[in-house]
Image (tube, rainbow, N blue to C red; front, side, top):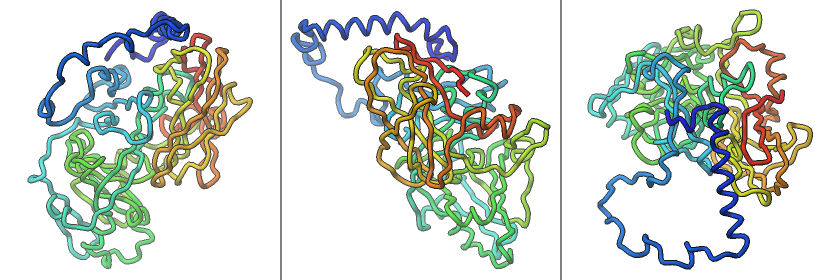
Length: 424
């Protein structure tokens, strides 16, 4: 991991000198001195650039080399069964480039080509079926933008401020346009008469990787908006995102978005697999655990300013920006506080897209150079209000890892340096 971006206090103390230098440069321009970038001929205007065939598949320019996924090495024993984080602090808008979207693997990402791909539908169906990749391409498809959030996103923050950066506290999330076949189309191809009353039926979905990651999904959800996807952001899925086919379960925790999807079994009960019993359940203070907590509740985070995105321009106009989302539907309002939740201002929402997708918010304000305690609070279409950390702890204690959607606080110093702190 790049040491500059390790989630520690030392990293942003090191950055203070650079920020001061940036402020000084801005001051020189403000004093009316000639800017050589304007007044003098620059090298890039003195020679021809690269040709059209230089990069057949376009890649980010070298100046954006720091906008990458990162992991926290001590979180897991091995990168094979681990996670990395989307650089949400460095992105704007809502769509996550595939190359920046976080990864979560249980036995590593696998190489499975389209020709070898098979998807089986079995169990309580009229006719068990096997689909090839080509078969899926011949069925009616849809396009939808959805967020995918790991249930453990912000999980390290239950007991207090831990990781220093929006990428590390909230970066187990992406938002992409998925193309695929609704799961209900495939289930109806196989026929559901044999299942009888569908009100109490489930589907069990399983991946083709060595972990055989599998989850139970109620039939009601399976027949609603679940997608068997083979494209993301207009192109083939990346290997780390389940190429060639993955499941998309809008608004529900990311572990259910099974990658390298190989089997869908219609059952009369939940399978109670490892990933829905010993894992991905929420342990209360008394040691009991709640399960079937699939939906990701309303949540938000300020991405700029934040620990990896300091204020470098000094006092004056400031755009506070962030992301909000809810597994229950659209975000209807986001409030921003500069004083740790004492007072709130309503942010401006960016263009709204699909339901259960990320929403960008902005607060256009003026910073006088005073310290700030920045918070954001999301409200979704059901009226649900994002809770404080104390409100979550009162209900669930501090034993949980999953489904932490508490209000996040950044302390911003007079120098514009941001740090993860707790204001409960």
